[in-house]
Each structure stands twice: as C-alpha cells, then as structure tokens.
Amino acid sequence: MKFRTVVGGGCALAALAAVSSERFMGWALGSAFGPGALYPLSSPAELLAQHLSLALGASLAAASVGFVLGIIASMAGDEAKRLVMAAGALAQTVPPVAVLALAVPVLGFGSRPVFVALALYGILPVLHGTATGLNSVPSASIDAAVGMGMGRSFRFLRIELPLGLPAIVAGLRSSVVINVGTAAIGAAMGAGGLGRPIMAGLVQFKTSYVAQGAVAAMVLALSLDWALARIERAVTRA
Amino acid sequence: MEILRYEGAGKRYGSTWALRDFTLGVEEGTITALIGPSGSGKTTALRMANRMAEPDEGVIRYDGRALRSYRPEILRRSMGYVIQSVGLFPHWTVLQNVCAVPRLLGRRAREAEARADELLSLVGLEPALYRGRRPSELSGGEAQRVGVARALAADPPLLLMDEPFGAVDPLQRAKLQASFLDIQKRLKKTVLLVTHDLDEAVRLADRVVLMRGGVVVQEDTPARLLAEPSGDFARDFVGEERSLKRLARVAASSCARPPATALAGSDAPEADGSCDGPSLYWVIDGRGRPVGLVRPGGRAKPGEKAPPVLPLGATLKEVLALMLEDGPELVGLVDDEGAIRGELGLVDIARASSQAVVTGESR
Image 1: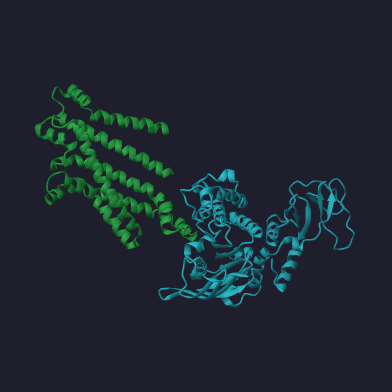
Image 2: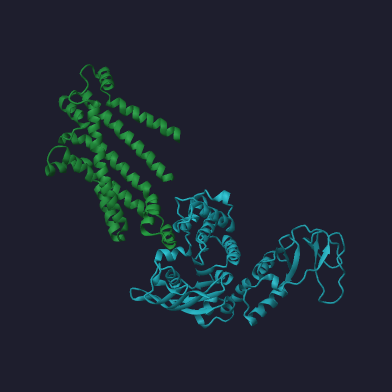
C-alpha cells in the first residue's frame, strides 16, 4: 500500500511538473502541432496556478460552509434532514455549467463571480456527504456513548466525526473534482486559468491551445482526485 | 443496603404514561430483572437510572442522593451500561472500546489497558488474541462479551443491562448467561437488568419485577413468581410450563444421590433383592472418572459411548434436557477433574420439583 502511494504520488507530481513546464509543453506541443503551438499570453505554470487557486479556493470555501451546514442538518429533526437531503440531491442534478451561466448576469464578469458560483455549487456535495456521514453512525454506538457518560463535544469529535469522515471526504472529493472541471469554463467569464488557452484555441481554430489547456486540466483533476481518494481510503480504514 | 431506589417514578410521552408510580429498591450486590412484554415500561425504568430518561414525577435515589443532583455524564460513568445491540465503536479496537470509560475518568492509558486485559480474560476472551481486533472482526457473542467487559472497565458498583443477551442465538445466550453469573459471583456487582425472556430472568435474577403497561404487576423472587403468579396476566406470562422453568433455578447437586460405582475390570455387586438397591453402577477408572454404566452383577468395562454426565454446577433443567435427548436412566455429575460426585434419576427431579413448590426455594 505504501509503495503504491509513493509511486502514484510520484507520477502525479511528475505529470503536474510536466504540464506546468514551459519548456516541456513547448517541446511536446511543438512536435505534435508544429511551431507556435504553445499559448503565448501566459506561461503554463501561471495558468495552472490560477486554475488551481480558483478551484481549490472555491472548494475550500464550499467545504467549510457545507461542513457546518451538514452538521446542522444532521442534528436537525428528521423532517429537516429529509428536506436537506432532497434539496441536495435535486441541486446536484443542475449541471455546474448552468450555475456559471446564471452567475454572470447576477455578478458580472471576472474571477469573482466564477469563484462564487463554484463555491456555491461545491457546497452541496460536502453538505450531503457530511449529513450522510454523521447520520450513518450506528445509533447503538451513540446510545452506548451517551450511556457511558461521554459529553456532547467528546462524542462528536471522537465518535461521530471519525465515523462520518469517509463520507465527508467523499463529498469533498466530488466537490473538488467538479470544480476543477467547471473552472475551465470560467475562462469564458474572464476568470483566467486553464480555460483561457482552450477558449482562445476554439476562437482562433488553434487545436494546440485547446490541447494544452485540456491536458493540463485533466492532469490536475486526476491528481487531485487520486490524492483525495487516498485520503478517503486512509480515513475509512482508521 | 439499597443502592438504587425508585419512589413513585413516572414518565409520560404525550398523554400516555410509559411508566406509572414505579417504586422499587435495588439491593446492593443483587440482580434485579425487570420483565414484561414490549411497552411495559421496563426499558423506561432502566433508562431513568442513568438519566437517559427523566421522570415526570417521583424521585429516584442513587447511593442515598437524589438522582437529579448528579451531573448526567458523571453519574453515567459510575454505572456500567450494556445494551442489546452492544454499540461497540466500530472505528476503535476492542482494547480502546474497553478502555473508554476509564479514559473518560482520566485514568492513565497503561493502567486502563492492564485492567482491560484482566476484564477480557474475565469475560472469556484471550487478551492477546482480541485486544487489537476491530468490532467487525467479532462474532455476536464475542461482541457482547466485549460489551460486558467495557461496562465493567471502570469498576462501577451498578450495572444497567438492557436485553444484554437478546441478540445472540440460544446456545450462545446460555453460555453468556452462565459466564455472566460466574462473573457476578466474583465481582458482586449490583445489576438492574431488562429482559422479555422469562427463562433469562429466572436464571439470572434474585428479584423479578413483572411489568405491564407501565405498572408493576408482581415483584418477587423468581421461584415465588413461578410458584404463585398473582393474577391472570402473571399466570399467562409465566405460562403453562412454569414448573419446567423452575427447574432452571435448582442446582442439580442439591438433589443428587451419592453415586454407586464399580471400578473398571471388577464385577459390579449383585442385586441384593431389595427394591431400592441401585439398578445401574457407574464404571469408573482409577481416578474416579466414569467411563461407562453396568447392570448389577455385570462385568465393569468401559462403555462404547461416553456416559451421560454434566458438570457439578448444572441445573435440574439441564439434567432433564439431557435425559429427554439421550434417554439415559441416570445422569452423573462430575467435578472439574472429571471424577463422579453424584447421580440423578427422573425420580429425583420429580421430588425436587414438588419440594420447590412447597418451599418457594431460592438459589
């Protein structure tokens, strides 16, 4: 298991280093599409960093809000719980692109509306995961915990949270992966990131630009998904 | 001394009373069983003892002090709590589970773990084998044993048990009950137990409180409840075969006769003509262990199958069950070394049973 973690992590880091290196990307795209294939307006590293900070920042904001809301939902009565779960499931059926499209008329162009839209959309998986995780704690364990004299906060931190953690991390994982993908479309609203070469390539019929952005976004999404999957497995086993 | 006392305790859910005017004293060092059908209020009464349910009327005293004057968390740490579904924490090892309350009480990890090892041995689980396991790696019976060890970990004077052996199969249940009685004999804990199983109450308890619809129907020793159920409900609940149930309370050794034996290789004595001489002799080896049965005058040699014996601690019910299953005329009682110490026939059981009705015997 440890070996796999090292190899997988090494591969992910190498791939990320490759897609953010101007030299490597210039050489790879150049040999596939001919000279001038690299998107000229920003360096690959800059695009990747913009993309990462936008997606991760939005996910982080989403996670903290979703986590707190999830805890509240799990403590609320059955009726409220069902309502939150249903609302969460319903909201998941709205495509993230639609959320972005709706954000622009309300919030205008730039990276801020995209950040807000991503954060709002990212709340739901975390909220759903948190509520599911905390509700999945066996009621017998809770009964035993209360009966042996564990206080409310001890019970939450040592019993409910650890037992709910796998579902919470799973929610965080889907939130991050969705946001990495959706953030690419954010470039159309002026948010920067890996969507910029893609948009530019589509407008200018430059396939190499599209390939540059798409490959980098794919590597980023796969790496993050892999890393969060490792964390998910680690907390499931603990 | 009474460690726990209910005085007119009542609990209402909406407009229905789950428990009404419940008065009971729980004597130190005894096992008290609350028994009744579902909805009889027995679990409510139990959960009032550790303030998981608060009475709407009446007073409950623990150690002479009103229960309300304790902080719930502090109170609960001084009472062992065992529930039917066990409720082990699935993400903790067996050791961590057993150490839970001592750790809550701020005891040092090393002390708590040493104590946990003792308790695991006490409930019949080899510590080295089990301490590192997760609850998912335990059978139902093993999990329940860990649950009992966990409840005993902080050495609480009082144990609250809600259907503690209800979730395991009958064979496991009998084993768990036997080892629980054994533990209780050694530790002398006060136990308040909820069950819907009359056999369990009769087997384990010193006092039985029969409840129905939130009201106590009869509070008595198991023997008297079986012998003299008061009212139609108690009679129905105790059932037709109450004389059979009563046998579970009587130790077989208390009505056994000294065994008639013949050393293997010798000849069994001839029948002397009188009608009360032994009709069967136990063939024993050099250490007094039975190896077969022989008729008077026959050659004493080891039998083809193992002779019908039970340990000295067996109850009359177990003796009778063995007779009904295998059909032996005699059942022997053997001590820990396997040496024969007594014998019983059907006649002895019948006599003991009729005596128990008269005297209202207790264990």
